[in-house]
Amino acid sequence: MRWQQMVGFYHVAKTGKFTKAAEKTYRTQSALTQQVKKLEEEMGCQLLERVGKKKLLLTPAGRKCFAFVETVLNNYDYLVEEISVLNGQKRGKLKIAAPYTTLNQLLPKVVEQYMVQFPWVELSLLDRPQRAVIELVKSGEVDLGFAIESIIPGNLDKKHWKIIESVLAVPREHPLAKEKTVMLEQIARYPLILPPEGGAYNNRKKLEELFRQNSLNYRVIMESSNVELSAVYVEMGLGISFATVVRDLPLLERKNFVFISLNHYFKPQYLDVITRKDKPIPPYMDAFLSLLHP
Image (cartoon, rainbow, N blue to C red; front, side):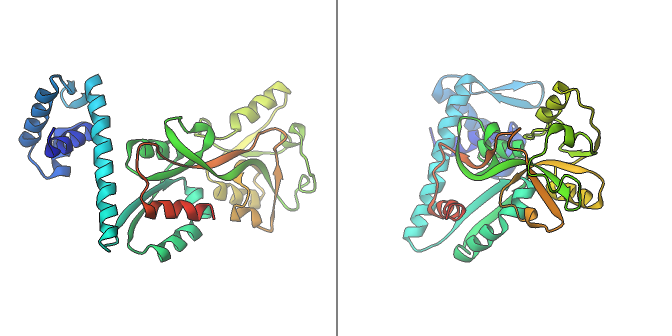
C-alpha cells in the first residue's frame, strides 16, 4: 500500500466522487482511478462500488481500509506538527464547531485568551446546529465540537463543560417573577415562546406531554431556537419563554429579566466538549481544552 494510493483512496471515499477528490489532491481523475484500482488489486477485493451514475460507496472491505487509512493520515499530520515543534517551527490548525449561543455567549473569552497564547495556530470557528456539529466531529472535518450530552453517540469522546438547565424567562414585572417555583397550571396561563419542534435537544416535547397529561390548554405564540432572540420578545411582553440555558450564560445577568428554574420538571444536563477517540490531540489543542477547564 503506497502513500499516494492511500491519499487518493481516502479522498475518493470521503467525497464520494473522483472529480471532487481530483480537485482536493491536484491530480487527474484517471490517475486517481488507477491508484484506487491498484489498491484494490493489492487488497484482492473491491473497495468502492458505484451506486447509480455518480455516487460511490464503500464496500465492507472498503470501510475497513478507509478506517485504517484515516488513522494513518491523522497520525501523519500529528507527527508533522510534533516534529515542527521540535525544530522550533510553531504551526498548527484547530477547527471548532459549536451552536450559535455557545459561540456568541460562552466561547469569546476563551478564544481571545487562546489567540494571545497561540497566535501561530490557524484557528477556524464554525456556527452549526448541534447534530451538524456531531457529524463534523465524526467525519474529522473539525477537531472538536460542543453539544448536549444526551445526543452524543458513544463512539465519540466527551467531557462535561457546562451545566444546562431548563428555565422559564419572564419580565421582571411579570406576575410569575416573584415565584420561586412555578407549576404547569401557572405556565399554561400565558402565551409561550418555545423552541421549534424536533430540535436536536430541547424539552419542548416533554413540556407539551406534561400539559396534555394534566389536561391543560396552552398557546404557542412564537417558536425560536435562539435564546437571545426569544429574550427580545419576552422583553417586549409578547410571551414567556421556555428554554434550556447554561447557568453562567451572560444573558442571565440581564436586569430586566427573571429566570425561573424548572429543575423540578426537567433534569439538568451537560454541554459537552466532543472529540474523536481515534484522533491524536496535539499539544496546542490540549491547551485549548485546558482553557475550558481552568
